[in-house]
Structure formats: C-alpha cells, structure tokens
Amino acid sequence: MSDVLDLTRDLIARPSVTPEDAGCQALLAARLEAAGFTCEHLRYGDVDNLWATHGDGEGPTLVLLGHTDVVPPGPVEAWSSDPFAPEIRDGVLYGRGAADMKGSVAAFVVAVERFVAAHPAHRGRVAVLLTSDEEGDAIDGVRRVADTFRERGERLDWCVTGEPSSKDVLGDLLRVGRRGSLSARLSVHGVQGHVAYPDKARNPIHLALGALDALASRRWDEGYESFPPTSLQISNIHAGTGANNVIPGEMEVLFNLRYNPHWDADRLVAACEEILRDHGVDFDIRWHRSGEPFYTPPGELRDAARDVLARFSGGTPEESTGGGTSDARFIAPLGAQCIEVGPVNASIHQVDEHVRVADLEALPDLYLALLEKLLA
Image (cartoon, rainbow, N blue to C red; front, side, top):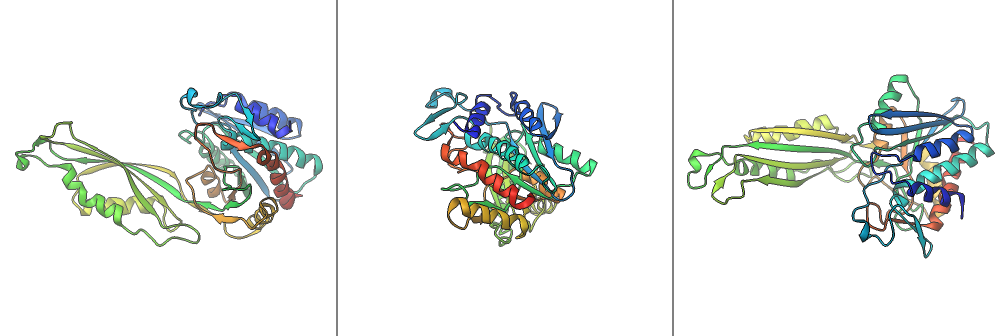
C-alpha cells in the first residue's frame, strides 16, 4: 500500500469524533517534525490545534488547512463495515473521515514531506494548520487560532483547504469562495388564552406571520460575482401546548441566512430586526454568526490551482463559491487568499463514507504540484 493510504487508514482508525482528536495530531506532528517542521500545539478548552511551519518566512506563507475531527458515525450496524476500521473494497476506501477529511490531511503531510525534501531552501513558508473543532461548535478551533495569529501579527498569504470539493473527477472543481452563514433563534411573545376568547389573548403565530412572510419572500440581492443571491430559509417553527383550544403564549422560530459579499452580518441583523419591528412583533432574538463570506479574485493562487487541477482532471475546473461553510472563513479575514481543493464529495457525513483509492493516491501529487508552482 502507498504511504498516503497507510496514513489515512491510521487516522481513520482513531475515533476522533468532534472535538476529540484521539491522537491524530500527535501522530502527524511527529512526522512533520521528522521532516524539519517546527510544530506548535495550541489547545483551547477541549480542542486540539496544530500549527506546523517550514521555512524562514522570507516570501509568502502558504497554509494547508484541515481538520482531524469527524462527525459521529451514527448506528454502527447501518455500516457495511466498522466506521473506524478502514476497509478497502473494489478500489474504494471506507471509513468515517475517508473523504471529510482525513484523506486530505494525510495527503497534506505526504505532500509537504516530499516538497521540503526536494526543495529544502524553498521560498517563503509552507505551513500545515489542523484543528479538532471543524465539525463541532467551531469556537476553540481555527476561529480561536485566527485570534491568536491576529494578536501576534502572523502573516498568511495563501490558504488551501482540503475539504472534499470535487464533483465527479478529482480536480474538476475549484472552490474560490464561500457564502457567509448567519443563524437566528427568534422568540415571539404573545398572551396565552382560550381560543373562544381571542380578545383576552394575543396569538404570537398570527402576530408573526406577516413578518415571517416578509423575511422569507424578500429578494435580498441579485448575487455577487459567482455567488448566488442571498437566501433566508426558515428551518423550524414551534408553538402551542398540544391542545387545539389554547392560544399559545410563545412561538419560537429558527432561520438561517446564507449570504454573499453584498452583505455583512451586522447589516443583515439590522435589516431583519427592522422587518420584525415594522410588523409590530414583540420579540427577542439570538444570533449566531458562523462566518462572513470570502472570495478570492483571479490572481496567482487561482491561476496556479486552475493549471494544476486541469492537469489532474483532464479539463478546465469549474470555479465555484457554492456549498456551505469551511474553516477558511476564519483565515480569509487575516488577509489570506483562500481556495478549496479536495477529493470527490459524494458520501461525506453519510453511512459508508468513502473515497476512491486512486483519487487518494493522486492527492499528494496534486498538493505537491501546487506547492512547487507557488513556492519552489
């Protein structure tokens, strides 16, 4: 078996369900230190973070960004094989984290080992940043590390995240940005009462319907560059006591906005709360700001990635800003240009998560080609 396949299997065998790292980063740090990297372990709360660097800092810093934590496997009996006992069947590697993203993390390490061995005096710095809090709350992971970097003036120029981004063939999609994500928990206050005496009650459902319709139907913008229009989706509504003759006194609504660079979180919060007030809703609202949108314009990083991916996929990659969020949202505000390049996204977070062995074995070569194009 290949080096990257061996390492990926070793990582999958460690049940690092978020925020647990289960020894993954210690294993990787030992390999990186043996290759000449300086490793710094940044533990915040229950979260492990690893920052490994090679080079003297004269020139640009390129960061390979990944995570060692995985989502829970769900019912083990639903899997064809133990999710933490990696198994190869018909040229496919199965196991939790195979695609998201222990395969990419292993490929990062193998690629940088080869790169510094071939180019010990490379320009700039090559760095690997890993967290065990990408799949969880994302509070003490890269978000917290970015705060530390900001405080000590750490300069980051380019960031390559190994999230599974390809669609059908390795390298057929280059992610050049992500939308921001803003979530709300809205509490609408009314007065509970008997349905036969509505004059003695205030129905929060009735009070909120107009405002919710206005929020859901608003055309927030027409899109931005390659970003789709901003979207608000109501995901949950709860009210009532379970009885059909009681007007509820409270209603709770959950909604989320996925937004492009036309907006920032503060402006969206103000716009939503203005709509609620204009409709006379008595409310409290709690906001969770998952991350602002980021976008990497055409330039040296995108040009290099486009050329490398075309070589691996056999055609010009699609350049996309779709999908959810990634930890790159915390690195972009530091001034880094960010892209995402990884294996095929076909089974992440699913039962029988998997990655093609041929794709996994090609990943170190892909990342190595990027490193050589940018730092050799």
